Length: 434
Ligand code: URA
Image (cartoon, rainbow, N blue to C red; front, side, top):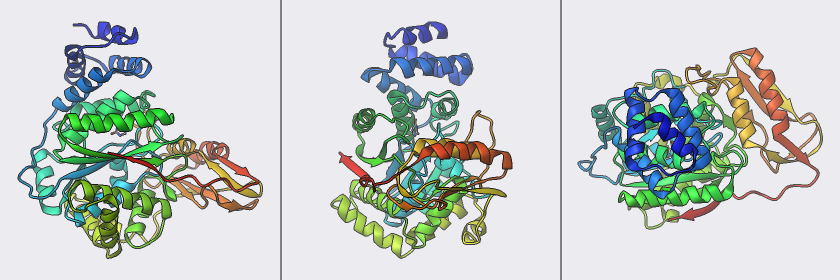
């Protein structure tokens, strides 16, 4: 086989067989297929798509590129959640400790920033010292001890996704159902959970702005889970505007800590509870999602989730004092307020533009080796539907480099629309599929 022929076959829209996909993925990991060939392959898949069989083979081969954990010795339901990617989408940081404090074991392998969407690993690494790269024996040890572990893909677990994910981030090949499915499922299946909750984002700020495609993705995530003998629920949720009030790595950790300490951030709070309810339901700790929500709410309110979060930070080598000192606000050196130019109601806050504006500030990468500015980000003062007067602050932007503020401001000016009439409210939870 020859990598060029495989790329050409995919480019010409002829489906690939299992052996060809295996040859290509394994070759990439061994070094006989180069980054530029993988980039061309990903772009060919982006334009030509993959059929059901190809998507399944790709998932299976990416899974087989590393170990699949056996967690059967852990005497708890093992449930994880994964989002298809959004802006300000930080629920994993609250949800994993919350579910763990409700008796669910949470073996979570997450990703970094992808395209314009943020990544849990980058957020966790904004806590000085926090390690997301433990070997498998430590993955199990942390999970057994704390009831949760939050790591990245490693050379042992989902290595193919680790490499391909980083390349997709900077080659405009994120928005593609088979690539998203295989990326998510290879990580989730490797970590050894029994059941998965998928938060499938719908809207302009998701990784699949087309609503029908998001629905197809939700169905595919459920069907691939079932093929591998796992239970799954997909919650379809709005991503027209950013989630919560903060975007950026440390800023999002800060917002999660605020919520775990009783602050009400309505959309983040609601979504977190529904996803927690679904995790408890799948884990058998509640008879329905609604019942699970009630149990989770109690554990959030009595600060069990926050205590569990601190326990995880400590065990994963993060600086607990830095976290506990959250109320002593940590901000990037340079900032600017973005204000309204007219009176009215905010009718749109384009989540995709907010994501790209955050990357301009230093929250994400434009090249694979770009360094992240952990304190960079955006604080929203208003959300869609809010009334606003000329001169009111819509949001505030932060960066460690002053020259980054201008390009971000420019992007945000086009991202916010103001109308005379109050727009209809956008539902946050659009549907739940089993
Ligand atoms: N999350 C992932 O892990 N992979 C994707 O491709 C999109 C979201």
